[in-house]
Image (tube, rainbow, N blue to C red; front, top):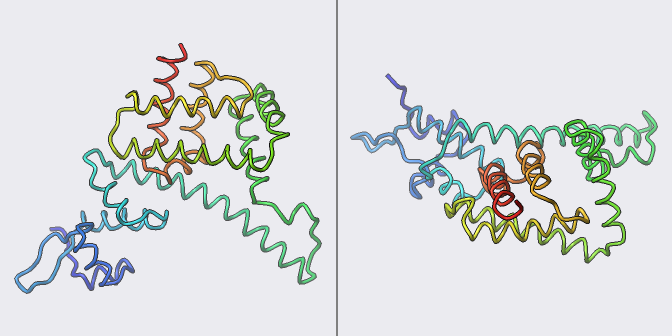
Length: 258
């Protein structure tokens, strides 16, 4: 027999307030397994696992409306979702460990316990993440990737701050549009998605200072799908976006890039 918990018992077990559980019931996000003749709500194993999903999504800063949409999808897979949560949380944890180390070393230096050079002040922030990501690329794809990275850096060297901000804003807009396409259930190879991919292909060409051919674009799709940092970024936009984007790019490469 599955053990059932009252609202108060589930609140004590999960740390979620009774008021929040009542609210989740009212908006249809988490319904009890049954309501007793005494009017008490009772929650079983299935509801507890659903609450765990809600809490994971909340930790990853998803609004309740988005969580409801995700959990209501016919193709929602709890195990797959947990693996995606793990990918994102592992990437965040690794970054936070680096930042904590920098913080501790800075405190120790300020308190006279140790010395700290200027460069160490910024370990764990964006430049170091970029260096680590480049090292990951080289390890995965070989030394040939260095030429592509050097070419990209050279192309962007003379960009103004406005150029860089516009470039980043375009990428954000592409991500949002792809996330919305996924949320709307659009096939990865439909015309609407291909239109967004044309913008993405042009965006990549500007960053690389050369137009990616079919093989290069497929390789980028593999990178997006396999890199923990990229997966964490895309899953934060829309759960399932990593695979969706990779599939869309590969189909685009086949149909429009030959």
